[in-house]
Image (cartoon, rainbow, N blue to C red; front, side):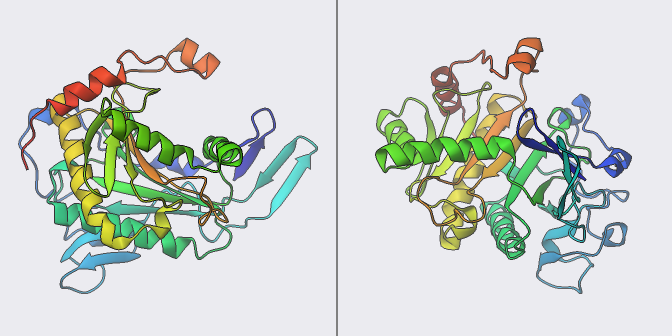
Length: 337
């Protein structure tokens, strides 16, 4: 069920079944342990496909569905926040209490057969496969007119909210546009109305010209630490060619994105000793895919600090590291391919 908060104009998802998720948390001591290629008890490892719901999609070279031989595998989340078969009609319990059914989709993208290989240490070919899978699933789900936006994200580490060690991404399609995303779209729309330019494209051009907060770039993408970063080492990866929706991104350009994403994650991993982080793909909602006010992009938020009373009470961020200093530190970090 989704309930509407009239004090913030936002929706809250209630999913009690997620409290029953199994937890195989990453302990701090795990970071020095030898990598585990396969775990007999892990539902995401090859050979254990029977332990998950039937797959939705798999990039496999051989084998029947729901069997080993895959390189990327997509399954329904066993403990979903939203369900595709639920009702999306909105109802009222009174003038201030509105709700709707838990309509949506919640999928897990198992990024590799390897049980414990960090995404930034995967071969570029494998990272590209994952990005292509995310792109394909995004467009497939957007074919359902009930879904207004799709949030693609990756949680790395216990501090970022992950409960299973085997590396994976998640995708949630929602029947509403969450307030934080609405705010970003409204700000960029207002800027476009005033200037006839995309604020993200102009920001990227300024950053590339200054180079102060650029970590790395190629012909198609640039990785920057935003001028007003909300958390230490917050990193964005933006396309240099304008495109509002990730679903409309040129599949042929996902290779250079994979290369840059590998570089960025490897630098963060090496420089910050494998930090917990959240990664999201920001994109325009339904109906705005072809409008020019927004630029889809990736945001990476390392979990190096914990928001305290002031941040939670005010909604303002306190960042203890200037992005210029963080960018210089990351540029000076040596990584191996």
